[in-house]
Length: 177
Image (cartoon, rainbow, N blue to C red):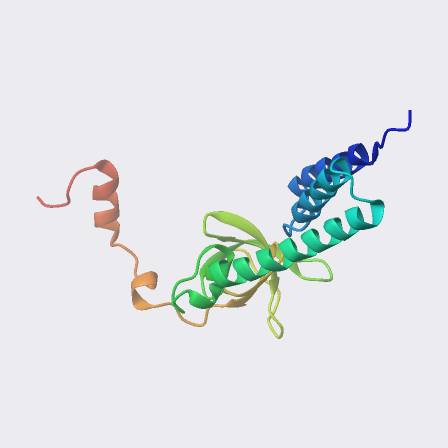
């Protein structure tokens, strides 16, 4: 049994790395998996172990470097207009409502913004949060937000509908007699 089974080990390593990529962020293990599969091919065609490692390392590093360049050039935020923000990038400056008052040493509370409840902390220099207060999101860190009390809302946000109009709209009718 003098056959060379190195290609099987390279293939197993390649498949394991590609599968591991599914569970990790960063898009790096895929390229090392491809490099390992290329080394398996090098083994099958009879290249020595040193050349197999050279194929593995060279291809893996080259693909990683190329993918980083491609991702930076085509998927970076630098090309986006300054005014367009999506997802978490759009949160700073948005107004929310405190739903749970601050508690504990870190003054942790909860704020409802964008239809979701977020763990919130008062920004530096702010007093503890009180339920019902309006706050503006200053920054986002992980799944937590840091907020400041709203000093003043735009006029259109503070206006209340007259009681007559509210009642008429709720009933589906009009208030005209």
